[in-house]
Length: 217
Image (spheres, rainbow, N blue to C red):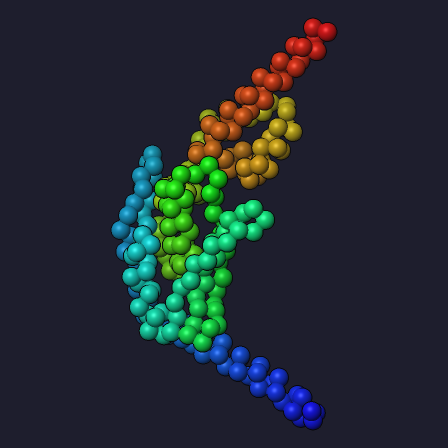
């Protein structure tokens, strides 16, 4: 093979790939200019908070036709890696290239099919809003979404109760914070409060029983 052909063939391939990617990004820009703002057609009330959001169907109504008209379509892939379930969302172009890549974990264990379904619906709408740069909900003011349900962080009194249960046992908090993924006590969400409080009460009861046994010896 001549030197010119040795260098020329890979360059042609690279140019083809580059042109395909460039074409895809142009198509996405044209599609995004035709996106409409999704209607916040659903809401969740939690205490004094009223959180409004656009459902998955409403988001799809705003982006699918512009994307499809430009040869783009959203793909949601589910897979398991190292025992963890994931959902990966991206846009595929008509030439096979892809753009964007949002990967989020899916909790399966201990959940009913309805809870898993609600979680997947939320992850899909969240991923699509990221990929297409769409505002699909109102500000949740530091709260957390689980499925389509708004979960707020614990109150000051609940946080103080957790602190009392921990007491001087810092190892207990390190263990629980690692297990539940909360860096600070005030980060604990209301849906996990009772579970963590119960775990601490059980741990304290075991420690007290051990201390009483050691004192009786």
